[in-house]
Length: 452
Image (tube, rainbow, N blue to C red; front, side):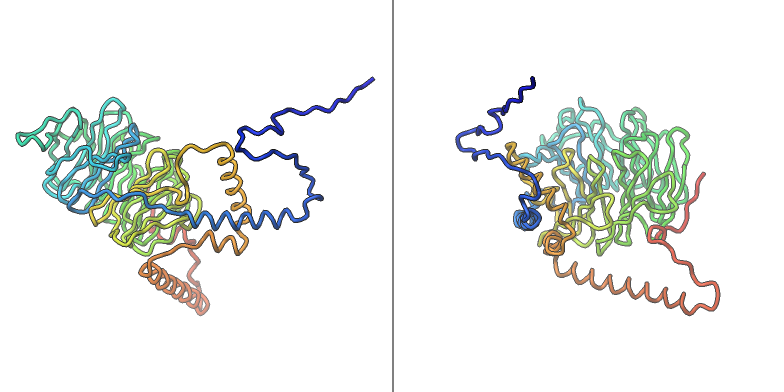
């Protein structure tokens, strides 16, 4: 004989605390809840409105530099510190938690600091800086001795170059670093002269970036509108990409070894696969002026870019339009941007000599959350994602207060692009023979690719 007994756990109806709400059983049969979809839509709309209402991305502005900030580096082994270099040759190390300067070198370089980077290894706090004075210097907060004045720190090592440097980057696990000027030079930290020189036709090279995943590959971009990939094992170039306008910065995807993004003078960010560079994987377009710098998030799923139009934009790497725009009244041209290593904050350095700290998610709040809070946040995110194409919800989620200068420039740019497109269509329509073929947007900015 079968005996069926009813049983239930006390956890199903007992409150966790006295202040908690009463737990009630609920039948999930949709026939008993005919207004469920309408109720969900209203919750999604309210969640979207609350997100925009609590969107306060700006956290702090850290002042101390006299000139603009043109170089920035983060330390993968220290979440709290950030290194900046300014136009008057000063270097500073900042603590993000206290929002103060914890180390500085007032006259680190005679001229503009063009690049800074950390020396890998958690045991060392060394970092490199290069400037227009043709010097590459190694610094350390703990190892650097003080000069006779008792304030200015001395370098750990100094390397003399033949040309003014424009950028620097360090190898992930070998004692090598690369600098760029009129050519790319690879240095060994134990030698005073570069161990190899790499070039392929560029007059001046703006940026050099080593791949931190595929560690034997490095990329550079120059004033001749080229992006060149080099192989450190053979000390020779791999391929050369020529675009219509010059590239200002390069960032490698930390999770995908073959993917990199470029910041271009034509207001766009281009994402490429180094195995096939005859077209861009994606084109990110929203800026209304030249993109000066960009950086990938540690997850490789997001990008941050800083532009000459005095704004910062955050992107999903697989979407063509920015998900958010950050700006302030006093922020000037943005020359360097970085994601923090915990993927929660964004840093920007601009021409007004201020280092600014922003939230990566404008409405996100830090702190310990209870299980109920986390469940509520996740439920709200799911609702917004489900109803994001409903016009009322979409309008709230897309609403941004954009400066009038950027808004007018975007309208003017849209008119110009439409006029150009209309002209091309008219030329095709009235061509007697061999009409001009349509070129995809991902190929328009590319002139050619050469492989060695």
